Length: 199
Ligand code: ATP
Image (cartoon, rainbow, N blue to C red):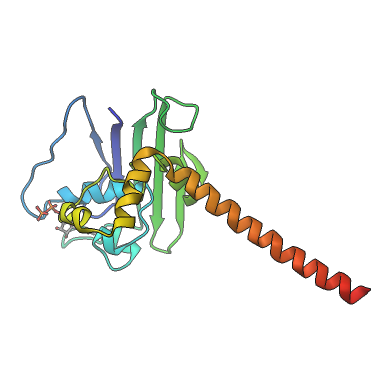
């Protein structure tokens, strides 16, 4: 059991603090149309680092903040925390439980946390990389996604297998190292230009 608990506050239709406990076995969420079922999966995708407002069914990121109803004032920030079981040490972190938190204010300011300590969005992306759960993971299959997976381009399909095989992390690190190397090479060229000028 990986997902233990989801805490929402001010996220989409969840104005009040709401806690969902996931128990052993499967969890199904039932409710009438428009009651906020999909908002729960949006919250999970958001807290694990989704950056596209459109894929969260909004036009800008602030659309995830509870916008108010006829009887209720809007709120100033949205916050979601996801508690994950890490007793198998799937995540490269030395705790048996991992809590990721994301908060967004109307001003646009964002806070990201891992185990209640501030971190960068990049740290959250890296935490989930190769676990299948992250931003580019395959654990959340949305309405209409199944046919997309089947008909998508070969390279995109391959990236799905790379994530499952656990090699995206290495690919990502290689790309980062290559980027740094390029920066160093550019600096070297600049230095050699300067030394020629000085000679
Ligand atoms: P369906 O069965 O039709 O897919 P659902 O139960 O999945 O419905 P959602 O799409 O999750 O429902 O929820 C939509 C509801 O969330 C709408 O009533 C919408 O007004 C509300 N909602 C979305 N964003 C916000 C927001 N920022 N503030 C307040 N309410 C919001």
